[in-house]
Image (cartoon, rainbow, N blue to C red):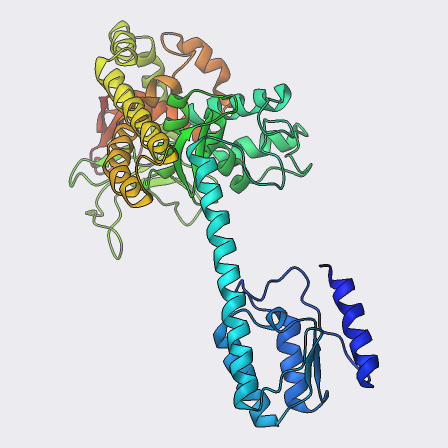
Length: 445
């Protein structure tokens, strides 16, 4: 029943009792059962306690309380204030008497049981929909799909594929967002993209035609996929990588975590001089474990490493190694392992849906399968190097032409796909020019 109708019934009751209504307290769309804070309910108690109002009318007592602890607090307040003017459309209750309190507790317990049963039925229904791969819920439609949440919206699906391809190629979430907004490509709600919204979209198994429930993939979905399951698994593994750079400051150093100290082996860190000149240094002090004896100016070492990578990119040996990795049976094995685990989870969900097993058995059996799937996906994510170099392998001239148009995150991913690290030896005393003999690259096999 709507709030307006409940207010009308309460006003009629007040007229019959000869009570004067001085205030209305309405917490619309906030259930008493939910446990969420109800500002108007709190204001009502404060008004009672302050003596601003002398009585209380409610549509039904279970509209006032669904949680026993709230009811007990309200009973304490009524006893302390000796408040007997508490009435409801369904009947008056004197909460200052033992009989009234007993009646209120019984009504509250029944109301809570009804709410708990309803909540359990809703949860069970959502679980059933999930394990059968069905659509559920309302709200805003997912990006890439029409209002029925099943059929693809071609224009948006193309954007999803583009974003997935660019992210796997090493471009940052923030950079992709900036580009989408500059191109005036709106979100489902018509607003601008944020890193959070794009991350949610790319990290959702929905775009691979998979059904998620409480953050877990439980079945093949009834809607069409936009990207492959393999690419979706790589994206989620990459997003979950704890070493992935997630801070919001722009990267200004191309070779972060690619330069190592020739003395102690620690990674050099970016640290500009007082005049602003960019440098990589072997840092010492709190939070650092370097020796503090090696440093090098950033610009010339970045130019040198980049030229070496261009040369390496055209090397027949490197092309053969990367092409071999793309067809590596090991990668295929991990993909098969992930697919097998996914199929087993779907079989398990089907057995639960058919009531062949119960929820406890489903949850117990699911854990080791998910662990196996997670491990396979992590191994599979390591194969993204071939994606990063798509279009540039054996074609350094094209990369040179495109280089300045790539964002720094993408540039770093390309360099990191070619060179594992570069060791930087200490500088020669009195030698103030760039000395390439200090650098020793270690190429990826």
